[in-house]
Length: 353
Image (cartoon, rainbow, N blue to C red; front, top):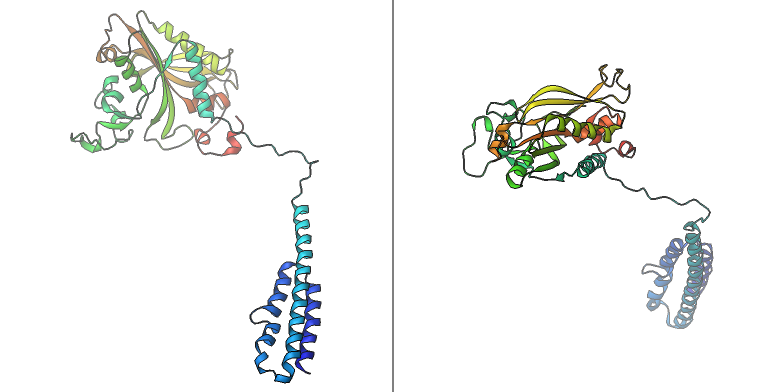
């Protein structure tokens, strides 16, 4: 078979393969096999110098005609395949307007923040102001100014996170220093007594830190709200009325409160406050351990020593203070059995509230 016949046969084979190409990728493989650098037709063009002179004109004409025919067939088939693939892509991406819309999941405030805001709104309605303070506090504001003795257990490394004191003073034994992560927001009360004019009606929400192992009733970091009132003629009756109002606003008008004698270094007398169980309505159940009551916060009348250390005359002024854990309030309000559930980030749980 002569070269002209070989090129003519190649033309027929190539046109057939072009017509059979199912997509642009297959068509590109055909083009490369024929017109690429190592393609069959390209090989004939490069070997023209080896064709006898008397046949060179006829072979060259035939090769060029085949190349033009193949290029035209490739262009036509590519246009058809491009149109078909575009139509298929449009069909695949088409939107069915009869389908229901997909609602965007709306975010909400975390339950801890919501309870903090709810408690703050209750006290703002009573005329209180909201105060803030540093989370890295000094020993004076966290303990000493609150009448905590030097050997009080809460001042040990077992209960408190101490940080490096860079003031130049030597740290005390066992690693304690004069700088720490606050264990309570009571320090904000001391700042308020030092900085504000009397009378004082203030609450102090914020994060606090204690060396507790996380369990159903303890967290190493939690949110606390403490309150302070200092004025002339403040009595324990004012404290009871305020906290009874708070409990009814938080848990419902039907809930009852009771006060149990307790001890805190910075208040005297001191008390723990309980609210009646919302599940058994005070009859006793597993949630309240059969008592009918749930402990929610601690409180008391401000110790005269605390007033004196902040420059307030205890003979003229009196006051009360209280403190509560927001996470505990949230769990009691919504019957959550484990504090850790509030901070684990499980959206299946958090979206319930």
